[in-house]
Each structure stands twice: as C-alpha cells, then as structure tokens.
Image 1 (tube, rainbow, N blue to C red):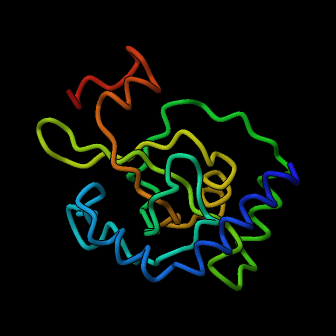
Image 2 (cartoon, rainbow, N blue to C red; image 1 turned 90 degrees about the horizontal axis):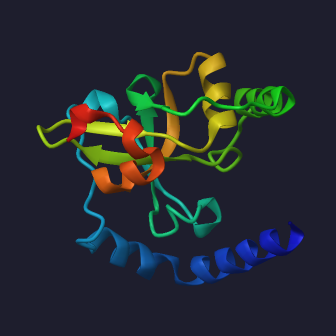
Amino acid sequence: MEFISQSIRQASRRFSRYGSSLRSNHNSSSRNPAPKFPSDRQVHSCTIRTIMDTTIHSAGIAEIHNVPMEVIKRPIPSVLDEKKVQSLMETIQRETSEDEVPPIDLLWITGSEGGDYYFSFGGCHRFEAYKRLQRDTIKAKLVRSTLGDLYHYMGSSAPKYLA
C-alpha cells in the first residue's frame, strides 16, 4: 500500500509542476466536454484538483462538482465498515480544507430520451457519511459514460428507462 501511495505522490508532484498547462488542455478537450446540468440548482460549485484526487476512472478529470445527493443512484447495496463511516463523518464535520475528503466518481449518462443520470458504484463509505450527516451535496467527479458502460457494471440489471 505504501508503494501505491508513494507512486501517487510522485505523480502529483509531476502534475503540479505542469498543472496549469494540463488544466488548460483538459478544459479545451472535446473528449470531455464541460458538464451541463438541467438547472443551476443541481451543481453548486466546481473546482480544479490535482492528480492526487484520482481513481482509474477519473484520472483525466480535474473538475469537482458539488452534486445533490438526491440525484445519485446507487444500484448495488453497500457493504459498510461502521468504523470507517464514523471516522469519515468526524473528518467531514471538522473539514477545514477541500482536500481532506476526496470526491466520489459518478458515471454521468444521458438517457436516449434526454435527461442526465448519475450512478455511483464506489465511494460507498463517503456517500453514507454525507447521507448520515444530512448533507444536500457531495463532492464528485463526473465520468462521462455510455449505456454500454452501465451495462458493463450492471449487466441485464441496468435500468431499461435509459435505453
């Protein structure tokens, strides 16, 4: 585990050295267009982060959004470690900087009839901590996805209303 942490820290240092040029290239990329939401109410703020806050899915995504908890679908039941949830709740309550609790990743899918849908498959302890604290929003990276991606995660259990 220490090896992985060390590698991420090294990558983070490399990113911060080139950060401004990478950010500007990312923002102009047509591969990841700027997210659009049905209303201003749905996303409250957006910040740019370092590579330290990444997963394999969101490594190329720098923007972090405050997404309303009510629009996030979690189709797979979570198996939670109660101590971890309690620890996260304490950290979130006394959070003094945006860097203390990393964002969750959300698959962002546009339905064939329109509408934006947000699915979460990881970050279950963070999601539960925010939920128990009755927070309206959670920090998230939006991973632009397709119905095919969703079928990859869920197989035939994927919602039919999106097709």
